Structure formats: C-alpha cells, structure tokens
Image 1 (cartoon, rainbow, N blue to C red):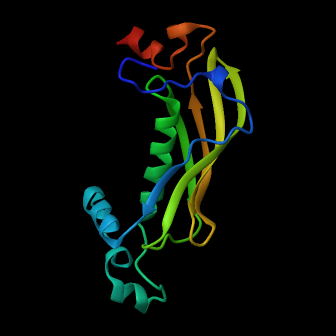
Image 2 (cartoon, rainbow, N blue to C red; image 1 turned 45 degrees about the vertical axis):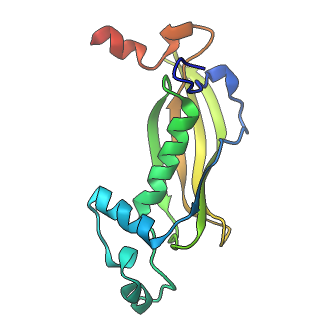
Image 3 (cartoon, rainbow, N blue to C red; image 1 turned 90 degrees about the vertical axis):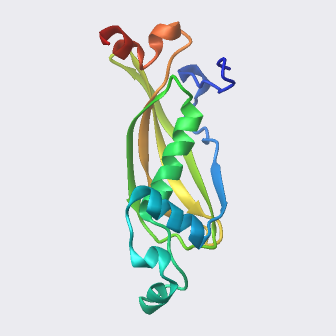
Length: 164
C-alpha cells in the first residue's frame, strides 16, 4: 500500500490468465448518460431523446460509446495503481449499451514480458451488459508496471522524472 492507501500492482503480482478486478456500474440511467454527454460535450439524440431512440428502432436511449471506454480506462488505472502506466488502450464498439441496464468493465491478462528494461502486461478488456450478457465494447490494452526486482527505478515514471 502507498501512503495514500492506494494499492500498487507490481509485475510479479500478475500471471497470464488472471482476471482483472471488475468495475461495475450499477443500473445506468438516462440521467447518467446525459451527464456524461454534458461532461464530454458530445451530444447525440439517441443518448438523451427517448422518442428519437424509439423512432430509429431502439427500445430506449443508449449510452455514449465513450461511456464504456471511460469505465474500462478507470478499471485499468485503478488496477495498476499510481506507479503503473496505461500505455495503450484500443477498443471496438460492438453493440449499443441500453440505459436501464447494469454493466461491468472487465478483463483478463493475456501476456506479460520484459522489453527494453520495461515490465509489460497485455490484457483483453471489455464492457459487459449484465442484462443481455453481451460485450458491448471489447479490445486490448498494454500496461507497464513497476517491478519489485528493481524497486522504484522500475517505475514507468522514473525516466520521466530523470528528464524533467
């Protein structure tokens, strides 16, 4: 644990096949969707206008795609801790997320390796709709973790500190 009480994940803590700690949303309401639109400045009628959503064949309003992206990113940054680095996150929006449903950002470790004296972990990640049991968003990520073998010097931020 760090002084702030936030857990730090190390390269040695991770094994291929490990699930990532899920981040559940609870029921996502239309209000949640509208607040997200307001915060990001990205508005689309299908996200906030029920009548429009029904006119285009949807049973209710849908979540902005970046809503799922942001939950996946938060799950990852919560998991890796303050000394970890989310280097890459690539997702595809495969289906719509309906308001009124429950979701969870989830993932699994697919690879770990050392390259250029850095400690890398690759994962498959997704945003799951509990109510339809479908992955509405799915993709991959690459994170760099500190190593207990090299201490603080193994932090992805070390080289940035030295050049600052």
